[in-house]
Length: 267
Image (cartoon, rainbow, N blue to C red; front, side, top):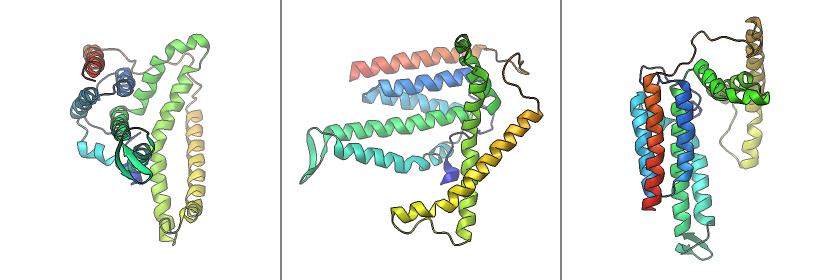
């Protein structure tokens, strides 16, 4: 299941989404997430789902690959849905003694599930279609106005990009360590919650050691290449907006306006 997490991975192929400026993809992802939490009705979520389906289709990322990435959040999704389903007050729909499921709880749980699924898939599309270098350059360009307040924009963008790209690396390392420990007789499944927590110690210790070793190797590699931060650095491939990037911005604005207005009118 650890290998099924798609957030932070890059899927190499040739598509119009891959060729977009990383700033467009970052802004689109932010706007998509904002819209998800602004809409409350059926119409807004339908438009959002159609928009997401179109982006996935244009990105040429296999839909099965996206669905596989959802397996990692099934537990979180079920926990959130059940929690809201039974603890939301309102008009009872089903009751078993003191335990009841309300219509408000059903609506809230369904809304939360849809938002969480679409949020993960929408965020995954950004990393699946953007290389680490482009992602760093896009973040740096978008945060450039913060330099007025003495914010180290380049360093912050680099840290965010590295952290995001370390997710699949650490997950792969966790999977390898887990298989090695199972081969030595470790049991991560049986027992109560406390026993399961204790059984994770042989997994977490080598994982932390491996993570620190990778971080140290990365720091040494950057130092060997004379990396000194973002001051006076030039770009081999400067980011320049093209016609399809501007059209994409227009398309995103239209999506947000249509989605929010349709949600308000049909709510």
